[in-house]
Image 1 (cartoon, rainbow over the protein chains, first blue to last red):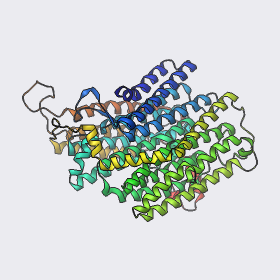
Image 2 (cartoon, rainbow over the protein chains, first blue to last red; image 1 turned 90 degrees about the horizontal axis):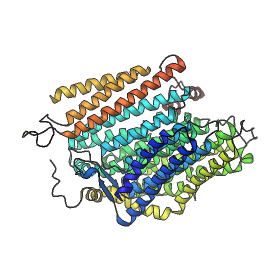
Image 3 (cartoon, chains in turn cyan, red; image 1 turned 120 degrees about the vertical axis):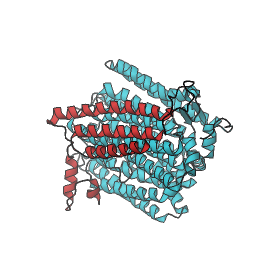
Image 4 (cartoon, one colour; image 1 turned 180 degrees about the horizontal axis):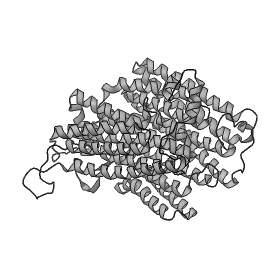
Length: 501
Length: 127
């Protein structure tokens, strides 16, 4: 299993290097990109199956002690999110290949290899067992996302790219300063050792660390009030890029937040996180209502949905955290699909502004169906995946006695449905508008539709597997909140040699 | 020793944040460099007091903590690469518009005009 964990990180990086070397030979480059992404996805699936059967795998890179060296930890949480993430990127890459030659495409010589670098960063961020490697993984993700966002060099992309880059540079620097703070307080950056040592610190230092990393990860996750960079930068990028960003980047922020704050026992921060969660939901949907462009509306919904995951985390109960994990699994494919459909609309009409497009339900019924399923899921209508995820969160909220956040979550859901109807009325009903000229080729349309359908099927699979997924989420939440399991797995139960200073 | 380092970190963070709030990308680059240096200094301060070089068998004295030094080196390399990237962005912006200022968002302006209250940013427009 050790080799498979390494493959999930090194594989995409190597494929990206080869892809860049042969970037002018389109078919070869696409084949290498697809192979790299499929290999990573297969490695992730193998890892999940193995973790299910044999429990957590821990790799000590170079054989170093966890006190000094890097550890990679594949537990159930990591393996589950890794599978969802890599499959999502694979689908988006297929969409990107179909999109080549259409008007809204990116520079294909860059998109494939950079998606691979992004995949490597995502794998590393998910699998890493220490905070400094997490910092490096974030940088890997960010560097590739900077390039993906700005590589076409259009004025609008530069403008929003600059905001994105500067905000993230600042967040990275805060991360480094936070690392110094944590290291000074505990003399380690290993998450398992931190889970042991942080709860023993003075309240002031402990909460300081918790709040500091809430800000750092909250900026990545677009939590209120640190979200304003997101709806600004996402809509300008090419569709494929936005789809990956919306599906993955913020969710990785939530993933590490769930991992760090539960393992280090930051229960005291629960109320702070709940308030931030409620405001994130409300401000996100309110922002979406004011917008008039499909991609911009969806970008604000990225923000509002982050609030639900934070709500689960903020409850700090097994049901709450399990709900957050399930929501994460549901949200990654759904958000990606929504943006891919936005790309299909843009490909058909030349733009995605609600004022300029219309009547797509009559002319392209496939797009209408592909939009309707994830849209209803996003709003939380049964029987789609959003319903299962939201139900578990709301149930957890009621059981924890936090009625206020439950009310906020339901109100935000209603507004989500309202703004989905707005897109439906604007894009799919009304008088049909003429398609943009020149139309994309049949083959590229087929590939794009196929990729989107695969992603919709993925969201439906989340519902079909809701039972097993919920059991898995509950187990994950129990392990995270207990912490001792993770500590024992990473450090080993026979720790005579590891003395804390 | 530590107090001087911490004062230096504070001064660097202060000036770095001030420069980053500017609209000109060249100032932002400078501000980001200062912030990067402050983080490296903070990591050094976190490593505790200095000792012998951390090479096994080189000295009988207690050695310095090698981990923060390894962190610092990695952080320096990363911030070097990113500085170059931001400079490239600034250069492209200069090609397009003649200067390297971060511009306003047109769509933001449109939404802001929808409300009767004057609003400059997203928080304002959704309030």
